[in-house]
Image 1 (tube, rainbow, N blue to C red):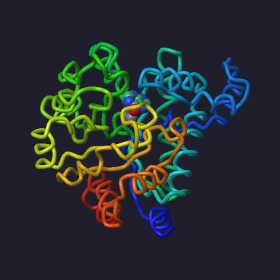
Image 2: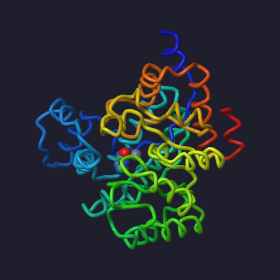
Image 3: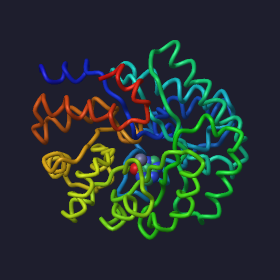
Image 4: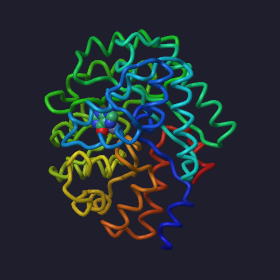
Length: 326
Ligand code: HPA
Ligand code: ZN
């Protein structure tokens, strides 16, 4: 298949992936053994068969269950390195990756273990693997805004390692507007701002992300398709959407990728990107997502090229760095 080989070889950036969701079952079991963490799965295969969800909440239970095995700096280093290697094999040359610190700090994991481990992996991956990266810290949207502010000051010693703050976790009932002051503070401190919105939630959450948070990108953003005025605004302002087709399929946001709004959004001039979200937990890395979209949405080669170009223009690389890739 010519288009598949073309996708494999195409240089691309990945802008929406959670490092925790890249932990392959074998590594979860190995870390559980190494760190003496009791897990309810007898084998990697048994764990893999638990990777089945009805919605975002049932997914998050599995996602946070896996987080429990990560304890030490070396664990975070190995998780990040494994992802960077897998991504580079798919010709991802630049990756902007999420970590949700609030999934670990309450379990007694040291902030330094998480952030220094990931930063060491990012440095080694650039030297040894040939992939550049940025780190984005996700805020738990089901916790109060004061917890987000606490986190922002707690990570002050690592501010220079963090490019952006994002918003993730259970979406329904936790609108972006609850975090408008927090993201204003992030921006004042020089950070980029992103937020998950309109994955399970309504188009109004996407609108809040654009107009109240002034986000640099919307993570997912699918639901904007229900509000054509909003689609036009997002297209006009060229606010990128980081779409995650496998994620939407596995969480029943769409019944089939044939129903996915990616192509319709593109046709309305929206700058869309394709991403894996949680590649291990959703059963596909970035190229599998590209290929499934080509099959189900009948994307042309030109459209594939445009989406890959978007991934670099929508990235947080400097203009000079973008020129290296475009
Ligand atoms: N949505 C919200 N929170 C998440 C996701 C997601 O797709 N993946 C990991 N945490
Ligand atoms: Zn996500």
